[in-house]
Length: 417
Image (tube, rainbow, N blue to C red; front, side, top):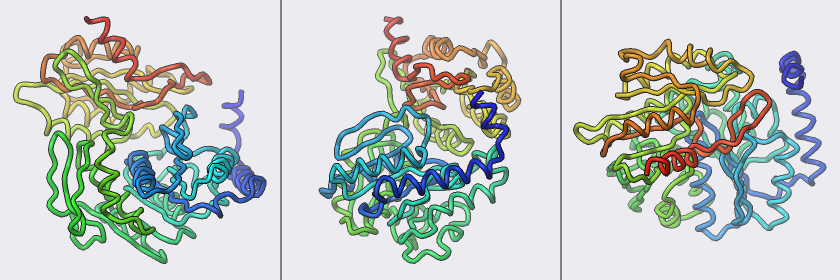
């Protein structure tokens, strides 16, 4: 019933409610953001990794830090999982989180900020010292309708922020630099950027590069994770953290849960869990997998698409995966109130060059799909299970059913022993 009522209400009316709730909550909790140095991170991909890296760098610098991201919350070293399935909490809950951070003695807070939260004014009443943008690629067009509106929503994070941190490698970065009081850019391509990855070397075990003569090592593989690290370096250096401190912190981060997250196994295969839910993130992930593939090894994919989200991206995702994976297993993800079979139908429209029952399988039950993928793995093969990352639930209608990809994979591996 709540879902039906929400669908009937005009978005403008809901946004007004969010604005009032956020501002009222800010006053109720004593305007906690005013006593904290707030760093907001937005973008289509990379927000969670970047936010976690920023928090780790600040902690390495001796700061007491609060973090609110898609996967986790941390306040002064105490961590818990984000089970809400929201990147950014409601105005009331977010202000309460900041209040708890201030009461715990935190001096800094890192917030992952979604375009929905910005458009709906859920983050009103928060003063940002630093605003970070990782990139903007196709996503959430079911809500924003156009890329222009999506980008405008993202730029709201920069309104009032003292410092703007922008990826020069994204499309039209100038859009996010306009009007900024203090600007800092980063890039893996353009040496004119303030934070530039010099002497970049990317390998299966991670990446190395230098910034202004300081050496960095990122243990998480992929050039896109170098971009995330550069964003974190730029954000923290903008508030006075030495590059050497950032280098120490980043090298200690071995993984971000659900982001290119490796699962140990006795099959001799490489099994990775990744949140990738957009065409751009899938394209980058499969490019990385292709670079990792040994001669004669195959890439196996388990993936789907989220319900009640941008339907136009579904066939695009299907085409990207089928063009890069040797074996594709299409399965359920988070259908919400949408028919999961229809979701799979729309993804399937993009799957090319595959024969059903040979190198393409459609298995609605996600556990069964994972079981099938594990059964066909040979030593050296790469399995990518995407779409849910480290999430702890699956959204089916109004229910949130217990689900964790890593746990299911490990359970199915045990059965194979």
